Image 1 (cartoon, rainbow, N blue to C red):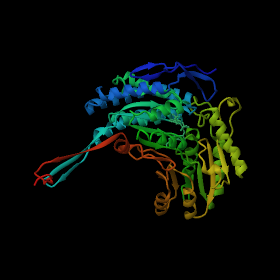
Image 2: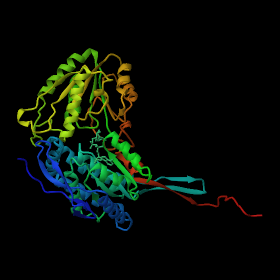
Image 3: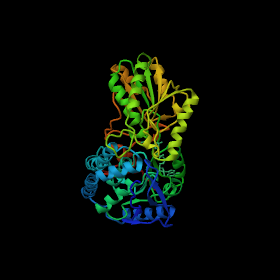
Image 4: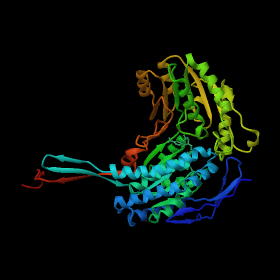
Length: 494
Ligand code: NAD
């Protein structure tokens, strides 16, 4: 029997409250599929309350008018409190999502860093430009917060992803309504607790738990909400863009991926192998930037596949609470069925499926063993559609031209990985792949200053660095000031 946790309420206007309807939904542990607690099920009425509180906090509260240094003290305090709570965050995130604790520990640390990073960024970089026009005008820009912003987040790396939105939104002076994923709501609740402890003015930060079709849609359609920052599936992103059209919202879309990893025959074999295995099997394979399609040069393919098989057999599949677990259970039974359905499809499409093993005692959880789809062809559905699990298609190529064509022959364009020691080829291929981010001779290592996001069906807009600050969470205002006696057209003079 897994532990029971306290039930979770909404956080609106600085207080923890039940949903207006008093309804709740079950939150299950992916390791046991037992109910851990009940979550308040917010809907349109709760979204409306949260938006009105956020609007009041923005318009009449101290947040918008606060000196930047003062506001950043709150942001730094949030970071300090996250650090103090980091072990609890890591433990609850692991319970909630099935992610191994060694990985959720890193995400908790990153959550604190997200706040520190935006505190530094806003203080150093959030300023406009001056444009002098001879001795006639001094024009300048100022960047102002939007007002109430809606943040909608997925279940796969909840704390890291939601702090990545909340931190720039608050640091730039907006007020927030967050609708976290219904499948992993625990860490959003911890953030609400942290923010209450940090004594942010009431209404600045609000959390409405609930389902996408009700709470999520109500947030997207709310006329007071100025912008929606969304991370999730491509189909949901399309729906959100449509639903936000009537109120002309700004939207940021971080969507799905089917990212290629290319290993040329001159690559550092061992490093490429380490990165390939980590890139698909970390985060339980539920990772937007996962290298779910690997292309290996014909000359080394056999050797590389043998080495992959050996790794797959040795990956430690187990209880996410254990320090040495490398791969845990998928988020829920629905997602488990989706991923195992794709493995069946791979067999029908002609792949040789090679899998590691799940220890017998873990059959109650949503475990999918680490899986290789060998002899895959890029036009198979399993190579074109996002599976979002520990499943990697392995393909062979002969020439650079051929592999670039295959890498790009897909709807998505989030990330790409190139392994070669030929410096010219590395740059050529990096520039030729249609994706928002490329790593050369590296796994996905984040530099928070760099734009994060995708092309094609993987998204619109970029998060990270000054991009989130200038392009999303603030709006430039241009101010034109006449400093001389410039000519003014004279109408109505005879
Ligand atoms: P999802 O689209 O099902 O749900 C994401 C969020 O949207 C949830 O909070 C959900 O309740 C909400 N939602 C659902 N329908 C909605 C609607 N009609 N209106 C408003 N909100 C709605 O995605 P998921 O299954 O939680 O997450 C996995 C997906 O996220 C994968 O496709 C993955 O690639 C993607 N992802 C992308 C990135 C990135 O940075 N590009 C990062 C992480 C995850």
